Length: 199
Image (cartoon, rainbow, N blue to C red; front, side, top):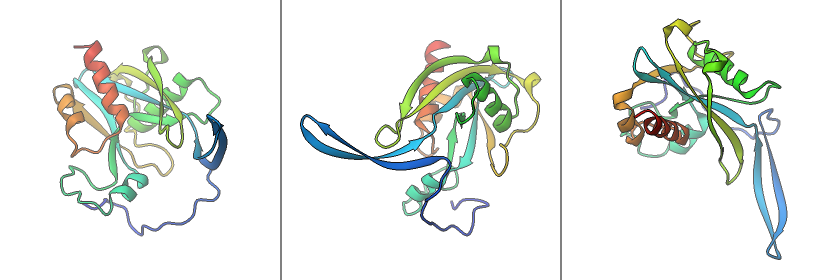
């Protein structure tokens, strides 16, 4: 399926991004001169959200141009969503001078519409992603929530277009193994963490 509400797609050089910077690192390894191309990018936070009343995980779905670029010439007839759309944990970059749990709290409110108390945000772990070219660190949180925390419908800010999706707990394991749902590695790890700690 072609992406909905996406049109006039074109590409140009990325020369003045406020999100990433490209550079080449030169170094010696075991006496041999090497070089490596790197993208400097912000670190990020993400949260596994569990809705206790719905007995479901709260995730987001949004259009990702990089995924669209990878998939646009492939056979994507098996996908259960439009090309370029992915299922992800609620997340955001850490480009503000604030504690990570506060940034996470703000992202949950912006993307999903829930105002989760800081004491409900439990840090799970942190890890590096895209280590071959970016090496960004992501801090992963967990929070249980319900409709009493609902403040708005979410959807993101500015020009973001984020859809909130509920994945029933009983369907979650099959969901992460089903390749017809394009998803991030973070959502897979987080679901497995939950099932190990809350069997």
